[in-house]
Length: 407
Image (cartoon, rainbow, N blue to C red; front, top):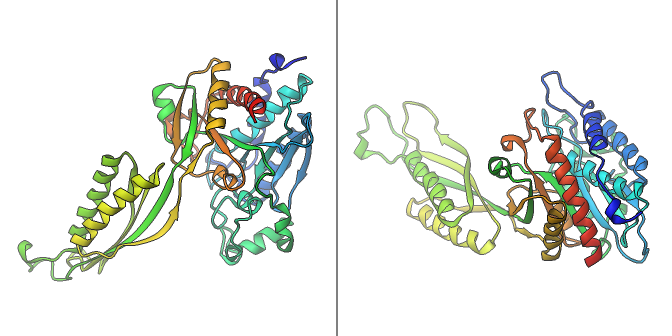
Protein backbone atom coordinates (compact mmCIF):
# COMPACT_ATOMS: atom_id res chain seq x y z
CA UNK A 1 0.00 0.00 0.00
CA UNK A 2 1.15 3.58 -0.60
CA UNK A 3 0.77 7.09 0.76
CA UNK A 4 -2.10 7.60 -1.67
CA UNK A 5 -4.14 5.03 0.25
CA UNK A 6 -3.77 6.87 3.57
CA UNK A 7 -7.08 8.34 4.69
CA UNK A 8 -8.38 9.65 7.98
CA UNK A 9 -10.92 7.38 9.66
CA UNK A 10 -13.60 9.97 10.44
CA UNK A 11 -15.77 7.56 12.41
CA UNK A 12 -12.88 6.59 14.65
CA UNK A 13 -11.87 10.23 15.22
CA UNK A 14 -15.41 11.15 16.25
CA UNK A 15 -15.63 8.03 18.44
CA UNK A 16 -12.47 9.02 20.32
CA UNK A 17 -13.72 12.58 20.78
CA UNK A 18 -16.94 11.17 22.25
CA UNK A 19 -15.09 8.73 24.51
CA UNK A 20 -12.86 11.34 26.11
CA UNK A 21 -15.96 13.52 26.30
CA UNK A 22 -17.33 11.09 28.89
CA UNK A 23 -14.51 11.96 31.30
CA UNK A 24 -14.77 14.96 33.57
CA UNK A 25 -18.17 16.08 32.29
CA UNK A 26 -19.90 18.31 34.85
CA UNK A 27 -23.59 18.39 35.62
CA UNK A 28 -24.00 21.73 33.82
CA UNK A 29 -22.25 20.46 30.69
CA UNK A 30 -18.70 21.79 30.97
CA UNK A 31 -15.57 19.69 31.43
CA UNK A 32 -13.47 19.46 34.58
CA UNK A 33 -10.25 17.76 33.58
CA UNK A 34 -8.07 20.26 35.43
CA UNK A 35 -4.36 19.53 35.29
CA UNK A 36 -3.36 16.45 37.32
CA UNK A 37 -6.87 15.86 38.64
CA UNK A 38 -8.23 12.31 38.59
CA UNK A 39 -10.29 13.13 35.49
CA UNK A 40 -7.20 14.48 33.74
CA UNK A 41 -5.26 11.34 34.58
CA UNK A 42 -8.15 9.12 33.45
CA UNK A 43 -8.26 10.98 30.14
CA UNK A 44 -4.52 10.54 29.77
CA UNK A 45 -4.80 6.76 30.23
CA UNK A 46 -7.62 6.60 27.67
CA UNK A 47 -5.61 8.53 25.08
CA UNK A 48 -2.55 6.36 25.66
CA UNK A 49 -4.76 3.41 24.76
CA UNK A 50 -5.78 5.14 21.54
CA UNK A 51 -2.09 5.67 20.73
CA UNK A 52 -1.30 2.00 21.21
CA UNK A 53 -4.27 0.91 19.08
CA UNK A 54 -3.00 3.18 16.29
CA UNK A 55 0.30 1.31 16.13
CA UNK A 56 2.48 3.40 18.42
CA UNK A 57 4.76 2.51 21.27
CA UNK A 58 3.64 4.51 24.30
CA UNK A 59 5.52 5.98 27.23
CA UNK A 60 5.35 8.76 29.80
CA UNK A 61 8.24 11.06 30.55
CA UNK A 62 9.18 12.54 33.93
CA UNK A 63 6.73 15.44 33.47
CA UNK A 64 3.83 13.05 32.74
CA UNK A 65 3.76 13.95 29.05
CA UNK A 66 2.25 10.98 27.19
CA UNK A 67 4.36 10.13 24.14
CA UNK A 68 3.23 7.85 21.32
CA UNK A 69 5.94 7.00 18.78
CA UNK A 70 5.49 5.58 15.29
CA UNK A 71 8.88 4.57 13.94
CA UNK A 72 10.11 5.95 10.63
CA UNK A 73 12.32 4.47 7.95
CA UNK A 74 15.48 6.32 8.99
CA UNK A 75 16.37 5.92 12.65
CA UNK A 76 19.11 8.55 12.35
CA UNK A 77 16.56 11.33 11.76
CA UNK A 78 14.98 13.20 14.68
CA UNK A 79 11.20 12.80 14.92
CA UNK A 80 8.47 15.09 13.69
CA UNK A 81 6.38 15.86 16.78
CA UNK A 82 2.65 16.58 16.77
CA UNK A 83 1.21 17.68 20.08
CA UNK A 84 -1.38 19.43 22.20
CA UNK A 85 -3.19 18.64 25.47
CA UNK A 86 -6.28 17.00 26.94
CA UNK A 87 -6.53 18.86 30.25
CA UNK A 88 -9.15 21.63 30.48
CA UNK A 89 -9.96 24.81 32.32
CA UNK A 90 -12.82 24.45 34.83
CA UNK A 91 -16.09 24.10 32.89
CA UNK A 92 -14.12 24.05 29.64
CA UNK A 93 -14.84 22.40 26.32
CA UNK A 94 -13.91 19.07 24.74
CA UNK A 95 -12.07 20.38 21.66
CA UNK A 96 -9.46 22.86 22.92
CA UNK A 97 -6.27 20.78 22.89
CA UNK A 98 -8.09 17.46 22.61
CA UNK A 99 -8.66 17.76 18.87
CA UNK A 100 -4.95 18.36 18.28
CA UNK A 101 -3.93 15.21 20.13
CA UNK A 102 -6.60 13.00 18.56
CA UNK A 103 -5.93 14.37 15.06
CA UNK A 104 -2.29 13.39 15.48
CA UNK A 105 -3.35 9.89 16.48
CA UNK A 106 -5.73 9.77 13.50
CA UNK A 107 -2.81 10.67 11.22
CA UNK A 108 -0.66 7.84 12.58
CA UNK A 109 -3.58 5.42 12.35
CA UNK A 110 -3.92 6.30 8.66
CA UNK A 111 -0.24 5.50 8.09
CA UNK A 112 -0.36 2.34 10.21
CA UNK A 113 -3.45 0.92 8.55
CA UNK A 114 -1.89 1.53 5.13
CA UNK A 115 1.37 -0.10 6.17
CA UNK A 116 3.25 3.13 5.44
CA UNK A 117 6.18 4.58 7.34
CA UNK A 118 7.56 8.04 6.63
CA UNK A 119 11.27 8.87 6.60
CA UNK A 120 10.98 10.47 10.03
CA UNK A 121 9.49 8.86 13.08
CA UNK A 122 6.28 10.55 14.20
CA UNK A 123 5.70 11.33 17.87
CA UNK A 124 2.34 12.37 19.27
CA UNK A 125 2.66 14.17 22.60
CA UNK A 126 -0.22 14.79 24.98
CA UNK A 127 1.40 17.51 27.07
CA UNK A 128 0.62 17.69 30.77
CA UNK A 129 -0.71 20.74 32.56
CA UNK A 130 -1.17 23.06 29.57
CA UNK A 131 -3.98 25.12 31.04
CA UNK A 132 -2.98 27.65 33.68
CA UNK A 133 -4.95 26.09 36.54
CA UNK A 134 -1.44 24.98 37.48
CA UNK A 135 0.88 27.99 37.94
CA UNK A 136 2.13 29.34 34.64
CA UNK A 137 0.42 26.72 32.49
CA UNK A 138 2.20 24.69 29.75
CA UNK A 139 3.92 22.65 32.45
CA UNK A 140 4.79 19.64 30.28
CA UNK A 141 6.19 21.62 27.37
CA UNK A 142 8.05 24.00 29.68
CA UNK A 143 9.73 21.07 31.37
CA UNK A 144 10.47 19.33 28.08
CA UNK A 145 12.22 22.45 26.75
CA UNK A 146 14.14 23.18 29.99
CA UNK A 147 12.09 26.30 30.77
CA UNK A 148 10.15 25.32 33.88
CA UNK A 149 10.60 27.74 36.79
CA UNK A 150 10.90 25.68 39.96
CA UNK A 151 9.75 28.66 42.05
CA UNK A 152 6.25 27.83 40.75
CA UNK A 153 6.30 24.60 42.74
CA UNK A 154 5.54 26.43 45.98
CA UNK A 155 2.59 28.40 44.61
CA UNK A 156 -0.96 27.43 45.55
CA UNK A 157 -3.05 25.67 42.91
CA UNK A 158 -6.79 25.27 42.37
CA UNK A 159 -6.99 22.44 44.93
CA UNK A 160 -5.72 24.70 47.73
CA UNK A 161 -2.40 22.86 48.03
CA UNK A 162 1.01 23.68 46.59
CA UNK A 163 1.86 22.75 43.03
CA UNK A 164 4.61 20.54 44.42
CA UNK A 165 2.13 18.53 46.49
CA UNK A 166 -0.28 18.17 43.57
CA UNK A 167 2.49 16.82 41.32
CA UNK A 168 3.79 14.43 43.96
CA UNK A 169 0.27 13.04 44.52
CA UNK A 170 0.10 11.91 40.87
CA UNK A 171 3.56 10.36 40.94
CA UNK A 172 5.83 13.12 39.64
CA UNK A 173 9.32 12.94 41.14
CA UNK A 174 10.41 16.58 41.43
CA UNK A 175 14.07 15.53 41.66
CA UNK A 176 13.99 13.85 38.24
CA UNK A 177 11.94 16.37 36.24
CA UNK A 178 14.99 17.18 34.13
CA UNK A 179 14.84 13.66 32.65
CA UNK A 180 12.02 14.89 30.39
CA UNK A 181 14.16 17.63 28.83
CA UNK A 182 15.04 17.56 25.15
CA UNK A 183 17.76 19.57 23.48
CA UNK A 184 17.86 21.63 20.30
CA UNK A 185 18.16 19.33 17.31
CA UNK A 186 16.37 16.45 19.01
CA UNK A 187 13.11 17.29 17.18
CA UNK A 188 12.93 17.85 13.42
CA UNK A 189 9.74 19.92 13.55
CA UNK A 190 6.72 20.52 15.76
CA UNK A 191 3.17 20.91 14.43
CA UNK A 192 0.05 21.59 16.48
CA UNK A 193 -3.55 21.51 15.32
CA UNK A 194 -5.98 23.56 17.41
CA UNK A 195 -9.43 25.03 17.29
CA UNK A 196 -9.34 28.69 16.32
CA UNK A 197 -10.39 30.70 19.34
CA UNK A 198 -11.12 34.00 17.61
CA UNK A 199 -14.06 33.10 15.35
CA UNK A 200 -12.53 34.36 12.09
CA UNK A 201 -12.66 31.01 10.27
CA UNK A 202 -16.20 30.35 11.44
CA UNK A 203 -17.43 33.81 10.42
CA UNK A 204 -15.81 33.60 6.98
CA UNK A 205 -16.69 29.91 6.50
CA UNK A 206 -13.08 28.91 5.80
CA UNK A 207 -12.01 25.32 6.40
CA UNK A 208 -8.46 25.73 7.74
CA UNK A 209 -6.13 28.41 9.05
CA UNK A 210 -2.39 27.96 8.52
CA UNK A 211 -0.70 29.84 11.35
CA UNK A 212 2.20 32.08 10.40
CA UNK A 213 3.07 32.98 13.97
CA UNK A 214 1.93 33.29 17.57
CA UNK A 215 1.59 36.86 18.74
CA UNK A 216 3.80 38.24 21.45
CA UNK A 217 2.34 40.18 24.32
CA UNK A 218 3.40 42.86 26.76
CA UNK A 219 1.60 43.74 29.97
CA UNK A 220 1.75 47.03 31.81
CA UNK A 221 0.70 48.54 35.11
CA UNK A 222 -0.12 52.27 35.39
CA UNK A 223 -1.14 54.46 38.30
CA UNK A 224 -2.99 57.72 37.53
CA UNK A 225 -2.80 60.41 40.21
CA UNK A 226 -5.66 62.69 41.22
CA UNK A 227 -7.04 64.50 44.24
CA UNK A 228 -9.72 62.81 46.31
CA UNK A 229 -12.43 65.29 47.30
CA UNK A 230 -16.11 65.53 48.09
CA UNK A 231 -18.14 64.53 45.03
CA UNK A 232 -21.07 66.72 45.95
CA UNK A 233 -19.32 69.99 46.76
CA UNK A 234 -16.46 70.09 44.25
CA UNK A 235 -17.37 71.85 40.96
CA UNK A 236 -16.59 69.95 37.77
CA UNK A 237 -14.01 72.50 36.68
CA UNK A 238 -12.17 72.25 40.01
CA UNK A 239 -11.65 68.50 40.00
CA UNK A 240 -8.51 66.42 39.54
CA UNK A 241 -10.23 63.13 38.77
CA UNK A 242 -7.86 60.17 38.36
CA UNK A 243 -10.57 58.05 36.75
CA UNK A 244 -11.11 60.58 33.97
CA UNK A 245 -7.39 60.32 33.18
CA UNK A 246 -7.56 56.52 33.24
CA UNK A 247 -10.60 56.65 30.93
CA UNK A 248 -8.70 58.83 28.46
CA UNK A 249 -5.86 56.33 28.50
CA UNK A 250 -8.22 53.38 28.07
CA UNK A 251 -9.62 54.94 24.91
CA UNK A 252 -6.03 55.60 23.83
CA UNK A 253 -5.24 51.89 24.10
CA UNK A 254 -8.19 51.06 21.84
CA UNK A 255 -7.36 53.75 19.29
CA UNK A 256 -3.65 52.91 19.20
CA UNK A 257 -4.30 49.19 18.77
CA UNK A 258 -6.68 49.89 15.88
CA UNK A 259 -4.18 52.28 14.32
CA UNK A 260 -1.41 49.66 14.22
CA UNK A 261 -3.44 46.53 13.52
CA UNK A 262 -2.76 44.87 16.88
CA UNK A 263 -4.97 44.22 19.90
CA UNK A 264 -4.93 46.11 23.18
CA UNK A 265 -6.98 45.46 26.30
CA UNK A 266 -7.36 47.24 29.62
CA UNK A 267 -8.16 44.28 31.86
CA UNK A 268 -8.19 45.56 35.44
CA UNK A 269 -9.03 48.84 37.10
CA UNK A 270 -8.74 49.71 40.80
CA UNK A 271 -10.24 53.00 41.97
CA UNK A 272 -9.20 54.59 45.24
CA UNK A 273 -10.72 55.42 47.62
CA UNK A 274 -13.58 53.71 45.77
CA UNK A 275 -16.73 55.40 47.07
CA UNK A 276 -19.58 56.91 45.01
CA UNK A 277 -19.39 60.21 46.90
CA UNK A 278 -15.61 60.66 46.59
CA UNK A 279 -13.74 61.89 43.52
CA UNK A 280 -11.18 59.19 42.61
CA UNK A 281 -7.79 60.21 43.98
CA UNK A 282 -5.86 57.36 42.39
CA UNK A 283 -6.56 54.72 39.77
CA UNK A 284 -4.42 51.70 38.94
CA UNK A 285 -4.96 49.82 35.68
CA UNK A 286 -3.30 46.92 33.94
CA UNK A 287 -3.37 46.51 30.20
CA UNK A 288 -1.77 44.38 27.51
CA UNK A 289 -0.92 44.60 23.82
CA UNK A 290 -0.52 41.65 21.47
CA UNK A 291 0.94 41.55 17.98
CA UNK A 292 3.05 39.49 15.61
CA UNK A 293 5.80 42.09 15.14
CA UNK A 294 7.85 43.45 18.04
CA UNK A 295 8.66 46.61 16.09
CA UNK A 296 4.97 47.45 15.75
CA UNK A 297 4.37 46.94 19.46
CA UNK A 298 7.44 49.10 20.14
CA UNK A 299 5.86 51.97 18.21
CA UNK A 300 2.49 51.56 19.90
CA UNK A 301 4.15 51.41 23.30
CA UNK A 302 6.05 54.64 22.62
CA UNK A 303 2.83 56.47 21.79
CA UNK A 304 1.01 55.14 24.85
CA UNK A 305 3.97 56.00 27.08
CA UNK A 306 3.80 59.58 25.78
CA UNK A 307 0.08 59.67 26.62
CA UNK A 308 0.72 58.33 30.12
CA UNK A 309 3.40 61.01 30.65
CA UNK A 310 0.91 63.67 29.57
CA UNK A 311 -1.52 62.31 32.16
CA UNK A 312 1.24 62.18 34.82
CA UNK A 313 0.83 58.41 35.27
CA UNK A 314 3.49 55.86 36.14
CA UNK A 315 4.18 53.34 33.38
CA UNK A 316 5.58 49.91 34.27
CA UNK A 317 6.02 47.00 31.84
CA UNK A 318 5.87 43.90 34.02
CA UNK A 319 5.63 41.08 31.48
CA UNK A 320 7.00 40.64 27.97
CA UNK A 321 6.69 37.55 25.79
CA UNK A 322 8.06 37.96 22.25
CA UNK A 323 6.22 36.70 19.16
CA UNK A 324 6.93 33.21 17.83
CA UNK A 325 7.21 33.07 14.05
CA UNK A 326 6.29 29.84 12.28
CA UNK A 327 8.88 28.16 10.07
CA UNK A 328 8.39 29.18 6.44
CA UNK A 329 9.09 25.59 5.39
CA UNK A 330 6.43 24.20 7.73
CA UNK A 331 3.92 26.86 6.67
CA UNK A 332 4.57 25.93 3.04
CA UNK A 333 4.16 22.22 3.73
CA UNK A 334 0.89 22.80 5.60
CA UNK A 335 -0.42 25.01 2.81
CA UNK A 336 0.45 22.23 0.34
CA UNK A 337 -1.35 19.78 2.63
CA UNK A 338 -4.49 21.91 2.50
CA UNK A 339 -4.34 22.00 -1.28
CA UNK A 340 -3.79 18.23 -1.52
CA UNK A 341 -6.78 17.73 0.77
CA UNK A 342 -8.75 20.12 -1.46
CA UNK A 343 -9.50 22.44 1.45
CA UNK A 344 -9.78 26.21 1.34
CA UNK A 345 -7.52 27.99 3.81
CA UNK A 346 -6.05 31.31 4.89
CA UNK A 347 -2.71 32.17 6.50
CA UNK A 348 -3.28 33.86 9.85
CA UNK A 349 -1.68 34.55 13.24
CA UNK A 350 -2.58 32.95 16.54
CA UNK A 351 -3.68 35.45 19.17
CA UNK A 352 -3.34 32.91 21.98
CA UNK A 353 -0.38 30.97 23.33
CA UNK A 354 0.06 27.21 22.96
CA UNK A 355 2.57 24.45 23.67
CA UNK A 356 4.05 25.50 20.32
CA UNK A 357 5.42 28.63 22.04
CA UNK A 358 7.72 26.46 24.12
CA UNK A 359 8.56 23.93 21.41
CA UNK A 360 9.82 26.84 19.28
CA UNK A 361 12.74 27.05 21.73
CA UNK A 362 14.14 23.74 20.47
CA UNK A 363 12.82 23.28 16.91
CA UNK A 364 10.94 24.94 14.03
CA UNK A 365 7.18 25.04 14.58
CA UNK A 366 3.92 25.40 12.69
CA UNK A 367 0.22 25.24 13.50
CA UNK A 368 -3.15 24.60 11.91
CA UNK A 369 -6.48 26.05 13.02
CA UNK A 370 -9.98 24.73 12.34
CA UNK A 371 -13.17 26.76 12.81
CA UNK A 372 -14.87 26.71 16.17
CA UNK A 373 -18.51 27.76 16.39
CA UNK A 374 -18.70 31.51 17.10
CA UNK A 375 -15.08 31.39 18.30
CA UNK A 376 -16.25 30.26 21.75
CA UNK A 377 -13.59 28.42 23.75
CA UNK A 378 -12.79 27.72 27.42
CA UNK A 379 -16.54 27.30 27.79
CA UNK A 380 -19.16 24.57 27.97
CA UNK A 381 -20.50 26.03 24.72
CA UNK A 382 -17.30 25.24 22.80
CA UNK A 383 -18.14 23.22 19.68
CA UNK A 384 -16.39 22.15 16.50
CA UNK A 385 -18.37 20.25 13.87
CA UNK A 386 -17.39 16.71 12.86
CA UNK A 387 -16.71 18.03 9.37
CA UNK A 388 -14.30 20.66 10.70
CA UNK A 389 -12.55 18.04 12.84
CA UNK A 390 -12.13 15.77 9.83
CA UNK A 391 -10.90 18.61 7.61
CA UNK A 392 -8.25 19.53 10.15
CA UNK A 393 -7.03 15.96 10.43
CA UNK A 394 -6.89 15.65 6.63
CA UNK A 395 -4.89 18.88 6.30
CA UNK A 396 -2.55 17.66 9.04
CA UNK A 397 -2.03 14.26 7.39
CA UNK A 398 -1.17 15.69 3.99
CA UNK A 399 0.89 18.50 5.50
CA UNK A 400 3.02 16.10 7.53
CA UNK A 401 3.53 13.83 4.51
CA UNK A 402 4.78 16.86 2.56
CA UNK A 403 6.92 18.07 5.46
CA UNK A 404 8.53 14.64 5.79
CA UNK A 405 9.71 14.92 2.18
CA UNK A 406 11.20 18.36 2.65
CA UNK A 407 13.21 18.16 5.87
